[in-house]
Length: 536
Ligand code: BG6
Image (cartoon, rainbow, N blue to C red):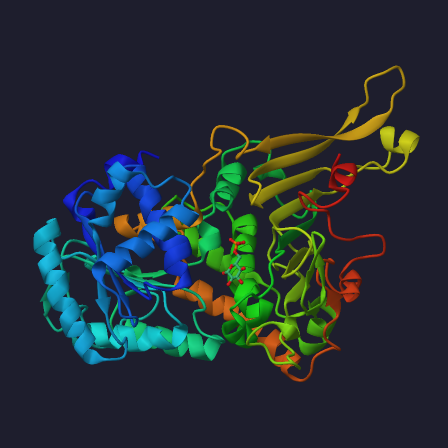
C-alpha cells in the first residue's frame, strides 16, 4: 500500500478530538499509533490533535504525557528532531464531558486550529471514554453545531454516499464545512436492546458511513491477511468447505488477568468483552464467501451473511455447547497470581466469567455440519490468537493402511503475537524406510522483513483519516453478534457453576472437554509447552 500518497491531500487534512485523552487507551494505543504514522510519513501535513479530559493540565504537561506514552509504547524511538514537529500538533482542553459549555469552548478552539494548521473543517471525534459518555458527547457535539442533527433517520439499510464528500448538508439544510467522523470504542452496548438504543442516539446525529466502530482485531495484520490467503491462492479456495474441512478452531488466550479494569469487566465478562466482537469477527473472516469486490460494503455484506447463518442455540444447546469459567489463584510463568475474585474492583463472590469455550455451527451450504470451536480466556498459560483449519483425512488406504492413522493436514493462521501461517503436511522421513511424519511449512511474518510490523491502531487510525470503514464493524454486524450471544447471557443469568473452576496458568475448566468427540481437543497454540511435538 502506498500510504504516503493517500493522506497527503486536503481531503484528508483534519483535526482529531480525543475524548478521554488522559486515559489508558489514548496513552497505550492512540498516541503511539499516531506517532508511528507520523514517523512513517503518512499523517496528513495539515493535522492536529485536541485532547479533552477532566484533569487539570497545562498544554505543556499534556505534551509531556504524550511524549512519555510514545517513549513507552511506540514501536519507534521518539527522536528529538521529529518530536518538536509532532508534539507541536497536540492541544489540551480541560473539561467535564457532560458540561455543554465545554463544547462551545471546543468549537472556538477548533476554529482557531483550522486557521493555524490549514485544516478545512474536517473533524474526527474519537470517543476513548467509558460507554456511559458516548451518547451525551454525541448530543453535545450536535447541540454545539460541531455535528449536524439529522431530521428523521433514513432506514439502516440505506447507505448512500451523499455525506462522505467534502461538505455535509443535513436534511434541514444546515451546513458544516468539511467532513465529521465519529470513532467509537467497544463495548457497543451491553446487549442487543442497549446497542439499539445507543445506535439510535448516535444515528440521530451521524450517518452510518460517518461512524467508525472499532474492533481492533480487524486492524491486526494477520486478520487482514486471512482474506488475502483465502482469495489470492489457488490451493485454498477450492477446498474451503464442508467437503474438505473437518473443523475450525479459533483461540484467543491471554496470560493477563483483569488488571485494573474490574469495574468494566464485572459487567462484561469474556462473552461480551471478547466473543461478541473479536472472536465473531475472526469467524466471519474465515467463513465468509468471496465478496463481489473489495469495496467496503461488499466485504461487510459477506460478513453479515455469516453472522446471519450462525445456528441459534436453545437453552439446552447452550448448556451443552458453551462452557464458561473463572480463574482462581495460580501461577503464570512461575509467578503467583491472585484469583479473579481477589482482583481490585471485583466482588468477592463474583460470577463473572473470564473464560468461554463453545462449539457453534454456520448453517449454510459451505459450512453445514462443520464444527467451529471458539475459546477465549484470561490467565491462561500463553498469549496467542490463532485459527486452526483442520482438513478431513483421506480414505484409509495406501499409506494409511501401512502406517495406521496419519496426522490430519492443518492450516494455522497465527494472528498474534506471532504473525504468520503454518501448514502441516505428511511427508516421507529421509532414509531407507518409508516412514511418514508430519512436517511444517512455517511462514513467520514478523521473523521476516517486517520485524516492526504496524500495530492494529495505526492501520485503523489511518483508515479513519481516509474515510475507509472496511475494517470497522457496521451496525448490522454488531446487532447480529448481540443476537447470537444474548441467549447465552440469559441462560447464564439463571446461575453460575461453582466458580472459580480453573486455576490461573491452566487451560481453563475441564468441562470444555465435552465440546469434543472422544479423543478430540484443542490444537496447541504457538508457545504452548509441547506444541512442536504435536504440530511437527
Ligand atoms: C480488548 C479486551 O478488546 O482486547 C481486553 O477488552 C483484551 O480484555 C484485549 O485483553 C485483547 O487484545 P489483544 O490485542 O491483546 O489480543
